[in-house]
Length: 493
Image (cartoon, rainbow, N blue to C red; front, side, top):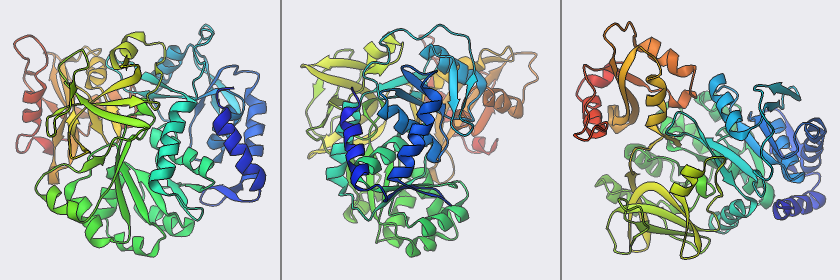
């Protein structure tokens, strides 16, 4: 049974801590006994329809956690998806999986989406969970992660972060996002309570819930911590039990990081890094006061060091072969090796072979992130090729561009990430319309909202006379970014 180590750990802890609160929502708390009973109730609902895997709507509540536990306990692959995604994207995900139904934990019923053949035998073997990320062809990619992959991350995390029995982990991201998988499982296998926030975008409610729940740790993309730094009532953090924040998935805006270090000195800040494909987190760096003078000089913040579980190396980005770079300060592509490297993309051999490989007998993943090493520390400077990192999500601009060009209103399109006000990054879509097009910005955004998740809809849309191309006929993304960053351009919404 491939989930046995996590399952054995969970059941052993639950057996001797049955009355301990392990999960909480704003107005409800669940002991080990209660959450495992809820998990078994959900399994009764899903066992007839799901023999290998469960696709379910992931809400931030105990029902969704119970579905995950039901899957772990019964050797089923769990596949959380966001409820608010456009129907077309949900259908695309189900088609990739060769599955037809989604379980709705809130109603304990299945939603029939597509008629499809049963999934191929063994396609879910040894797969603990699948998370979907953006893909270049207009279709998302499903990342397969095994139990041993996740355990590698969890064991390292328990050693690095020194979780305490008195801690309460604040879960602030959606359960279909890998940060939440980390939060949930580190809590479960460490017997540390996990609190699922009901409100994150509404800061006054977030502050209220933070004080009420007595959360001690929050792991999020930097966007949330920047919002707090810019908010009026940030001083309420002083009244909370928060002792650490973990920031990953994007660059922490320098001015906001400086704000935290200056004004909230009691809180430890960790800068972490790791792709979904290599089990969420692979490195961590505790930010010290001495780092502030360096980041003021525009030096990147370190992301941490290589570890025995998760080996980090640099290779030449331009080469299809893995050619290692061992010199300090030489820029290349970050590569992860070891037991945290996932199993590839489901039903997508082409992309799997491109990114996942065995090098020197070790599972290896080329991340597409660019960086360098210096004195044993690694530094991230950006993305290789076309991938964009935005608010913790990886977006392949070609997915949006492909969707845009399906409309006869548009001739060409280019999605870039550009600096807006206060050096904050914005998703900007440049569009060259056809001669007789009547499209406007609201049309473009509405068109995309029907087809992609909200985080992929650009904040800014620019209509341009012509999209620049390189001599060999490829989109000139550098020129497009320069156009997007022209003074006054980003005033267009």
